[in-house]
Each structure stands twice: as structure tokens, then as C-alpha cells.
Amino acid sequence: QGGLKAGFYSSTCPKAEDTVRATVERYFNDDPSVAPGLLRLHFHDCFVQGCEGSVLVTGNSTEMTAVQNTGLKGFDVVEDAKSQLEALCPGVVSCADILALAARDAVDLAGGPSWSVPTGRRDGRVSSASDAASLPSPFDSVEIQRQKFQDKGLSDQDLVTLVGAHTIGQTSCRFVGYRLYNFTATGNADPTINQDFLEQLQTQCPQDGNPSQRVPLDKDTPAKFDVNFFKNIRDGRGVLESDQRLWGHEATRAVVKKYSGTLRGVLGLRFGYEFQKSMVKLSGLGVKTGNDGEIRKVCSSINTCNYKKGH
Ligand code: HEM
Ligand SMILES: [Ca+2]
Image (cartoon, rainbow, N blue to C red):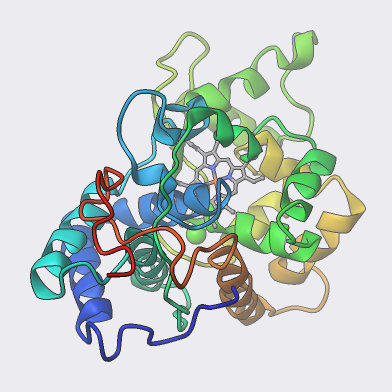
């Protein structure tokens, strides 16, 4: 986070944040699924090489071609905002910042909290598929999930809070089906799934169905950024195995309880508050500032010459 500050563009490109906001809003009004798309895209950017736009680069064996990154969306929103900002203040606003701001706006539009995003990130000049291995997988145990977050300086509390992003958006059946029919070759379903919910999931993801079929990650309010996701986890209604496992481990269960109100009733507000704090940490991972990196001309490609690199 060192080197970032709120309102970094207030004199160099005063319309930067408004432009991003208006762009995200325009796409969101047309298709609300861009909100989860942008939030996940920012997470996948930050976890690999830091929040420096590496996930946005197209080409052979760039980060976005890694399996971990299949199904990412929101690239068009970032590129659209970028081209407007290049017209307004050429060479000033980084793609990494646009994505960080867009993720914040997406959460706000989905009814979640809003917060001030420290800016001043610069774009990286490397994007490689093999680096995507640091991303968590839905098959990861809690220990591995904790380790992957710890490697980034993120605590158990940050892990559970940030995974709360799954309160919006969808998964494909390929990450669900194996839990429903022949889980770890027992011939049965994953025993941590609530019985009624199991039947519902089996209807949504039939045994020989299309693995690309989409299912909401939060069965009740998939478009609303609320605490419902945590109640589902508590009740055996987590869709991803990695999400449900957060209830099966002491360290992470405590945080789920805090948000699902199992402990003391209405603690929903706390999730919104903690989410902002954890997002500012996530958004500050491995950032490039000052003269590091560059300001890309186009978010999908690293500059060919030193466009605006300190001159
Ligand atoms: C242990 C950590 C995590 C794992 C294993 C995980 C895994 C996944 C998987 C498998 C999907 C479905 C992908 C697909 O089928 O298209 C997904 C979707 C999503 N993830 Fe995560 N995730 C994790 C953490 C996070 C974090 C930290 C965020 C953001 C702060 C996040 C935001 C999202 C969102 C918003 C979606 C829905 C995307 C959409 O509907 O387009 N996830 N995640
Ligand atoms: Ca929700």
C-alpha cells in the first residue's frame, strides 16, 4: 500500500473517478452481472504480481489464459473507461487503478459498502500464465486457503471476509457437480451439504449436464451484496467446497459466525465495515508506484516503447 493515496488524480485528472463510476454504472444498468465480474477480476489481478493490471493483458500465455482465470469478465468495462480517460488525460490513469476503482463501484452498485480507494498504482510490464498458481482453487482445504492468503499478508479474518464477495455472482457447474454425485468416490454427495439444498443443486447441475451451466454462489440473494452468503455457509448451503469448508475449521468458522449472526444476533453491518478494510489491503498488494512500471496506453497490452515512463 506504500505510495498510494486517496485522490491521487485530483489535480492530474480530476474526472478520473467519476469517469470510472459512470462507466461501471452504464454497464451495470445493462447487465448487473458485471458487478461480480469486476470484483473477481480485481482479486485475480491483485493475487498475481500485485494489483498492477497483469490480468488484463491479452496474448499467448499471458495470465488471463491460465485455467484459474477462465470465466473472468469485465475487461470491456475497464477498457472502455481507459479509452475515455486517455482522451481526457493521456498517459495519466493506470489500468490497475481503473480496475481497483471499478471493483469498489461494483460493490456499491450491488448494494454493498463504498469506500475511498487509495490510488497511484502503475501498470506492470509482465503477464505470465504460470504466475496464476498463487490463486486459490475451489478444491483447496482451509489450510491451503489460509496459507495462500497468509503469503499475501492477509489474515484468517481477511480470508473469510473477502470470500464474502461470493455473496454476489455465479459459478459454473464444473466446480459443483463433483460434490453432488460421487464425492471422493464414495458414491454419495458431499456430506456437508444440507439435504434440501443438495436436491436443489442436483436440479441446477444435473449429473450429465453442461459443466458451463451457471449457478448462483449465494442461493438467496445472488445480486445483493449482503450477509446472506455467511448464513448459507453456516447452514450447509455453500456452493463451492472451499466456501463450505470455512465452516469446518475453527479459525474460519469463528469469522463466519460473526457475520452470520450466530453469536449475538444482528451483526450484518460489521461485514460491510470489515469488507472495506480487507479490500483496501487486497487492493494494495504488491503495487507499483512512483517510477515503477508504466501507464499503459491500452489495458490489454503492455506498452511497446516507454510511453510516459517518467517523461
Ligand atoms: C479461497 C478463495 C477463493 C476461491 C477458491 C474462489 C473461487 C471461485 C470460483 C471457483 C468461482 C466461480 C468461477 C466460475 O465458475 O466462473 C468464483 C467466483 C467469484 N469469486 Fe471467488 N474465490 C475465492 C476468493 C474470492 C475473493 C477474495 C473475491 C473478491 C474479493 C472473489 C470474488 C468472486 C466473485 C465476485 C465471483 C463471481 C464471479 C461472476 O459471477 O462473474 N472470490 N470464485
Ligand atoms: Ca447476497
